[in-house]
Image (tube, rainbow, N blue to C red; front, side, top):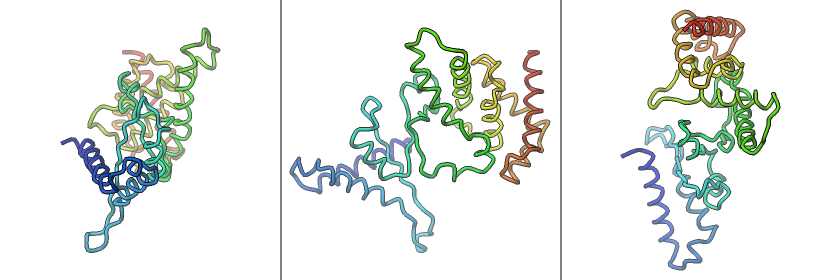
Length: 248
């Protein structure tokens, strides 16, 4: 069984059992305090194990289906208030071919950048804000008759940033390649390419970087920092790939 479906089934079953155990009264079962208590009891099982059980920790992954994407409804806000953040998957993004279909404007992590290495923080920085602003501008542009040059450039950059985040199934990238990919997009090197060329260019860039600039990966993996030398190597690889790509 798909692990996500299995997790959802377990949570649904737990809620059903818990609700049934509260009492027969419908008003009592649906009492907000009782529902919050049930969610807390389910999620508190994500705890550190004792030494007799091998220590380590467990992670709970509650899955909530929203009604028409409304995260302000009672159940979503209830679970969000207990957990350490949420990944919001959008059906509209999925149907548009953007996968994983994560809405970066609504998705939140209370851990934040603490889980990232310093090199990723240096490069990714404002990408989440840029993508959120792009989504808002894109919605506005549907009703605007004309956009100024700055807005047009922001839309073009946002489309390319969104394109580079597309990922093939079961094909994760090493963090060094993630950093190179995001840097290429946020620094505007993809702006001159057509949308459909972005992923092909990035695939070839990552291969070119790995083959001709192995020092880049060594610097990132050893220091966890996007040093000046690493940036020089990456810029060289990008310029070389742009020249090669223009000749194809």
